[in-house]
Length: 137
Image (cartoon, rainbow, N blue to C red; front, side, top):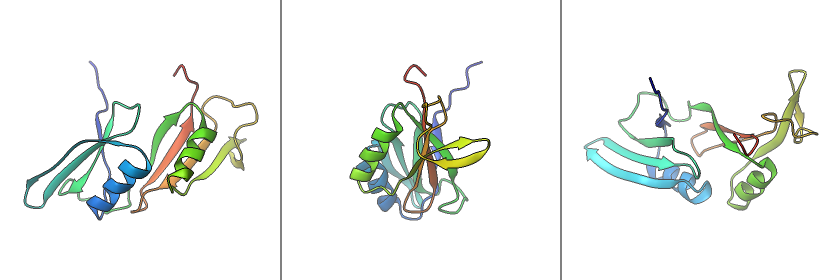
């Protein structure tokens, strides 16, 4: 049985403001944006290089805006990702890594796979983590 992750719903308060952030600051692609019924709008956005999309809109979820936390986006170079995001006006925390379970500022000194991170929040305070992974993963 294949179980492919296709869509994650991100609760937002203002669809147009969130769409602007994800498209113009993060570079997501708009796959669709439709008002399907009164009070039911779906904007499906895809991160660059990903097959899994996010959905923002109205009538999608009972979750309060800003309650989605810890979604991971993978990059091969966290430093480059930080520079690009900052250039597009995103407030980025990091890079940082973990040693003996403690968060330490800066990229992992040997660039240990899966142990360099950044994080940021969207305009509704939904939080995202960017994790550096080896290019072959």
